[in-house]
Length: 262
Image (cartoon, rainbow, N blue to C red; front, side):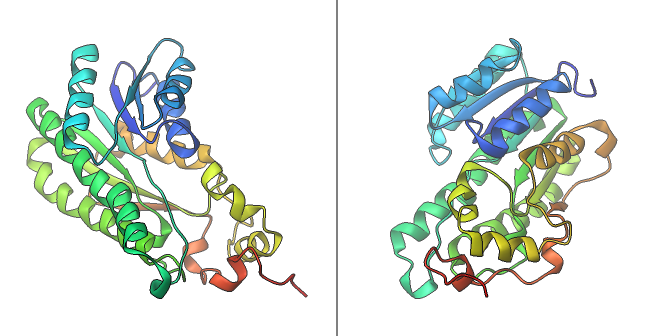
């Protein structure tokens, strides 16, 4: 129970990695506020946390709603010790075919949303003199993927935002770190993994020969949020089975209409 009685806020908590992070933190004793745009999804996550959960709904890009969500957590639990910014979205299109609307949506949720959340989280933690912010980046922060210009740029931004915030907040006793998942079995990638050609390409490029489970990512988040990682700040830890050592699968292989492998 390394996180006993600590208070955590997790965005993107309605499903996938975010929901699993909530469960992992609660299993270590934390009281968890599960935030998602879909309030019912947030409630499902919070209700499964043995009475230690709080469900919140907010658009992570909405400054006012995120400030109010932070205030609700503090009113309920008195403080916030851990914040995990896990909300994200992706789009697959070549650069020349990516619309401005698609670009803005990915950048707004994956990068601006992290900034908006971090700002209110950092202010609260600095006033307490302690806290840990964990951002969910991606191997695509350092590994280019065809058709992922917006997503790669946003996640690279999360990596650098983490570093800058770590420098600025260290004097206030606040650590800032990031976790970069590789391919993870979540609802967001289910359609991709249903394509046998794409699945084969990805598995061939993962030295450990399987996608990550959400629990693999959540375990690293729980570790970084704990006192065992007390001397870690400004780093992005990649949990990818070694995939970032390899070549990212091509857009042709990932396309739903790709020909079957020979």
